Image 1 (spheres, rainbow, N blue to C red):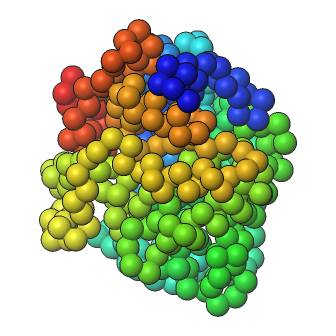
Image 2 (cartoon, rainbow, N blue to C red):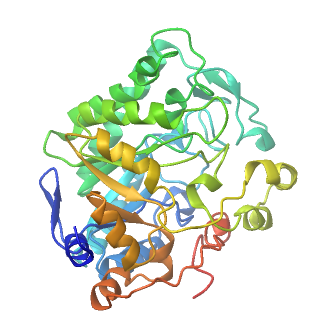
Length: 399
């Protein structure tokens, strides 16, 4: 495919399980810190509305927790009747721009600092430390029993039905980045010896049960995307080879579109981002003194150095693309120019997710269509991500 054809492909209509998108650019789900008290705000609505106005085909509302105990902290939405009216209104407003609206379906699992949690301990596949909650007096997470696993599967399925009912066009299930579902996928956090632990097939049992429950809840004709981590980015975690097998199992299980990302938010977050470290911003805006000290102490080990380069995940993402036979594959990771769009589309990917470049330029799609030599001005300083706990949430500091 030549460069012109690749650009034409990117800016042409495409479908995900019958849902028509006006082009192939999707706003990635990146938690914006704009849901204080767990409710959507006008600022969150405007961020997504503006991106839709700029031509993006579908925007993704990040981190919609399946239940209260699925929140990382109390300033995240969880799917319940309390959010129905404002969430429905926000989705309707965003859709006036012609963009489609998806949302991430998530669960924090073992990792939470949620002060409104029911009970005193989070829960995941195995007993262990609650890395996010330690500074808040929540030192450990409980290992789940089989009945608790079945209940969580049902809870996530019910949340999916709720999400469809408020007007979403698609759902992105979060299978990655160290959150609740991926905790079952990783041998670091899943040390079970029953049918839910050990082999790749056993570690994938819970994610596949979740996928089946969500599919049953929303129906066969509703688009389901899923984000995975191609590796945990630490020794003993999910490997790139295992992630190919996992992607194939999700594809065979009926996932419509796979998004191969990388890393874990709690063990190697910079593998997601590349570029300048997010540590300074997180330290500056952290309110908890113990967490602030912890972030300073573990900074060099946790926030590793990955210099930014365009399409920085493409080599391993190509291996996922080659394994997926039934659904589509959405590339994410370092696309800031038409040259990179040409490379990704020319390599056989079906869609592209963007995060930081859309914060810098909400008109990315319109400008890229109008200018063949378009280069986005994002410098990948990652100061936007460092503002996640700041008043007002994330924004591009360059604008």
